[in-house]
Image (cartoon, rainbow, N blue to C red):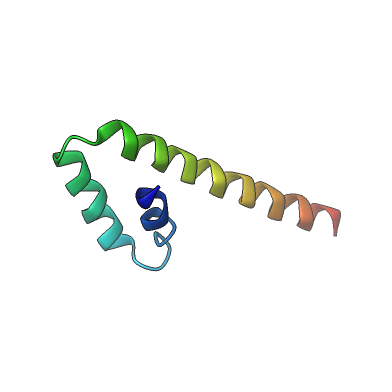
Length: 58
């Protein structure tokens, strides 16, 4: 789950995270990186949706 922890730093340091993802792709961990990145994107989508619902309720 180390990849997920790195991906959580995406907001604070996007350049280094892209470099790390690219590096992991080179050393053939494509699926693990892909699934973790997809999971992170889904996590962000859920948070954004919750925030939007919160503002709609206001």
